Image 1 (tube, rainbow, N blue to C red):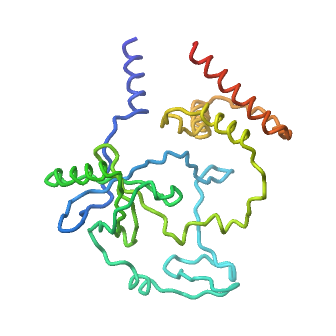
Image 2 (image 1 turned 90 degrees about the vertical axis):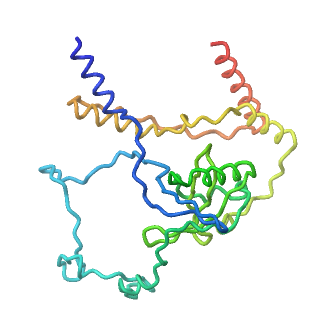
Image 3 (image 1 turned 135 degrees about the vertical axis):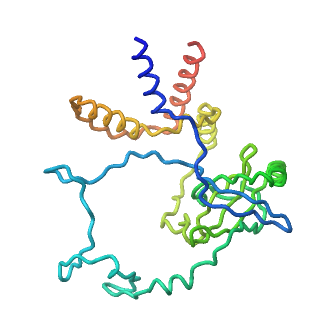
Length: 287
């Protein structure tokens, strides 16, 4: 019995290893004015997608990708491949690696603060990927001073830095006692709503409808819980893989077709929705 418990404990430890700080992706310093704060940059997210390899159906060996010229059907070695930018149908301009290197941003170990803004002014569509900045031991006081100043002011610092021969623009903001650096999409990469080709039709929204919609939103209001952000499909896929590893036979049930929702009176639908949400909240409170 003791052995079984030990084995179960080991298995649990393997699935949920203790949290460890990942290796820094970059090191340098935050520079604003005459103040320099040596920092290390760590990833802020760790995507745990279920990834697959392509296998040969016959013998289950892993397939390899090769470069093949469509003209002579010959396999092309990587050193013979060049980069081309398409300027027309079937027409490319070749750009050499030397030309690309000459335009690459100058390597730097500095996160340069450009300006300070109200972080709420940044539309979430601009946020790309979060990273954490941690101080070197000797810079802890200056680091925490910047954290506290940003926290009290409710501001964020727009910064520029170079990592792995690529220039980034980011927003630095405090999360508790840690600085988070969110890389931002460049302005020309963000699609404006004006470019969608859609114009809102002239629809008359009555005050009672607006008030009922606001009431419905308020009935859904609650404190944000990060635990709600989970991927049901990913979890189901992991369970499927675990069963397959254990040799269990899998049967797939047919999915029922979704019924097309019927067009109903908007005001009546809002009233029923509010009543249903309130009923569900009452049940949870009584449980």
